[in-house]
Amino acid sequence: MRKEYEWSVQLRTLRRQCGFDFAGLACAIRGRRTLLTWREASGNRNRNYLKIVLEPGKGIAGGVFQRRKAMVVQNALLQYSESERVHTPILLAEDIQSFAAFPLWKDGEVDAVLMLGMRVNDSVTRERYEQLQQILSEGIFGRRVIPESYEAALEEVWRQEYRELPIYELVDVPLRAALREERSRIAQDLHDSVIQDLLGVQMQLRTLKYTDAMEEIREGLQEAGDRGDSWAEGCLSKAFSFYGSQLSDHGGLSG
Image 1: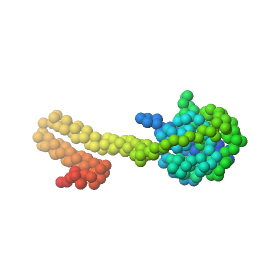
Image 2: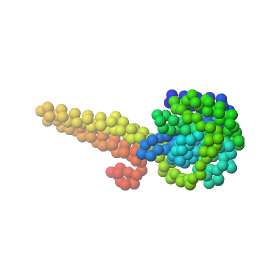
Image 3: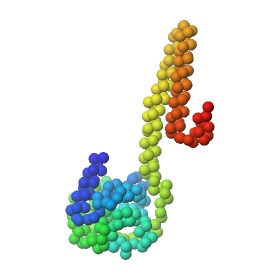
Image 4: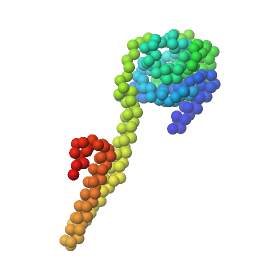
């Protein structure tokens, strides 16, 4: 949480210092496949940027990440066709008309992308770009920016066929996090209730072998049976809370 707060402060300071309408930080998530998500923003009109998930080479952040080059666009409406703008969601979400985007380097590789945008055309001037370069040369977010000329950044605009991510891939990252949280909750719930009840019944039954009085043994077995019934009901109740009406539909809670 502290890291995200520091990033937010740095973004806000940089945006205000250089006079931009919007500033955003996209970070790479490396796993079975690499994806990029917008982690922090300043000057944003909404929080839709948090829902954007990109592959390397897709969208603004994905393109800068893959090509490892800074990029300046002065007029997004002229630069991108209508079909291409559909696949640059950060421009649509924040109504960005001109912007500069930079790859951020750490440990010899690009692991994040910084974007600063304006909601009017032709706003990323040479002076503003060079001011940015000077500030970023000192490093930001614990990463560094490799200096590139204004002309090179203007030329760094690419054309490609965009492949839209299937919807299950768009929700893959938050879905996996939710699944991990739910599994942890279920495991803790089982440990705190079901397993403790089982251990209690087990210990009670083991003590009976040291008892000679039949009446005491019968009472112990009856109590263990009652606790077993209570445990079984508790298991069914928890199963129903986990899976809802699906169990009823399949007779899982029938008498």
